[in-house]
Amino acid sequence: MTLLPYAVLLYIPFVYASLPSLNGTSTPTLNVSDSPPSCDTRSLWNIIWSCAATLFACTWTAVHPNIPGMDEGKVTVFCRRLCIMIMALIAPELMITWAANQFLSARDTAKAFNNAFGAQPQPHQARGDHPDIGESAATLLSEIPSSDGRNSPHPIAPHVAGRDFKDWTVTQGFFTWMGGFMLYFDDKSRATLRPDELLRFVREGSVDVPVIIEADIEDRSKGDALSKGIAILQLAWFVIQLVARYTQNLPITLLEIDTLAVAALTCITYGFWWKKPKDVGRPHAIYWKATASRPRKLAYDKVNSMFSREDCSHYFISCVYPIFTLMGAATFNSPRAVYSRRVPSVGGYDEYGAGRHRTIVLVIGCCSGVVFGAIHCLGWNDVFQGNTKLLLWRAASLEIVLTPLAILMLSYFIWEDHSNSEEVVASVGLVIGALIYIAARVTLIVLLVMSLRSLPPGVYDTVAWTKFIPHL
Image 1 (cartoon, rainbow, N blue to C red):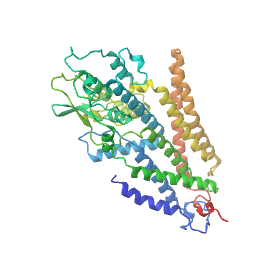
Image 2: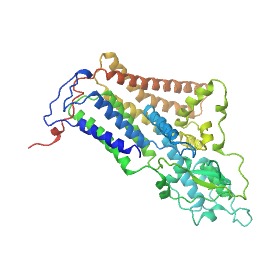
Image 3: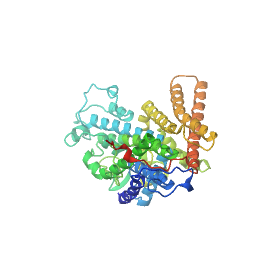
Image 4: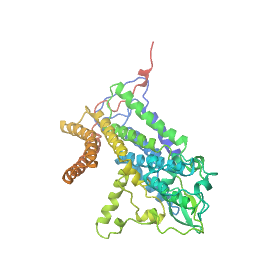
């Protein structure tokens, strides 16, 4: 919110620069140096500024980071958010898979807590009767013996919490996975709790069930209608300009096409995170009862062994592990996350549930890649300096469209029962497909940057909005 006034001030010149004069004349140009500072034309900086503002507005609004460590400063939190925004610009498909994994985990967690503490299931229900809850939560519920509480040293949590517990929604599920509950021993914070750990401790009577409703979580969230409205307004204005330019046969730059593709995928990410609290500063305290024995280990209390290596692979792992986490392959507790007592920056989902939902997440991720490539195909007939660049753009766009489909088929082939040699061939194909996809993305970025050196005639002309007004 501190940057919101500056965003409003930056948005005003974008609208003003895109409005032509009433005469509707245009001056076609061939390169940047030939663009005249006329009222009915736009400059290269207007184009770059408009795209940058659209990307910033979309990513800043869409990114919902996990709760930071309580001792981390504002600069650290801002830099982490900036890194996530850069990842959203470079790999928006991976951001979609991350958001989808968090949404599915949050939904499963809400159902698991409602089944445990809300409407009580029948005694004969088994694990197979809970198809929608997480794997770890379903296992926990099935292993808990039924009892009336008279012979137990701890009261049974559902009966204790039945008076105060309110049904959870996806918002509470998100809040739990993003590090919303901090365990305290003797008024000292120990570690962030996973949903399955919190569920187990409540059932054992070691902690009280957290009574926090959706309105309380939304009160902690920093997202508001004004910031969302400005982002939607900027994106809508950008799209309207592109549609108007296409209607009036005015050329569109490759930078604008790429901006449209990234913004489209960012909107999908925002859809999955619609109910996720944004920019929550501190977790909710969960106090351990003095009569209960302390747990020996917690999920977010130990660094993964892969970070303990002292060779050069340590630096390689530090750069690569966020990619695997975004893909949903696994979550990793980095030393910084454990030291700060927080959820990993790009984690916060059930890796076991991610395996159970792998088909859904894979389809969502691959379809996002197809959409990304299809939007870049809008530059199929763009004017390039030389036929080679045109062919490269077409080939790279098609590769981005087709490679996710190939990855989807190879993944289904690996998941089915096949011989080891066939799985090795399919795995090699996945690696090759990923490398081809990365190469195609790099090719598009290089070509769109090179295209700014000499833009086609008419690209500096602004839309004659008066032509859309009906005349008698």
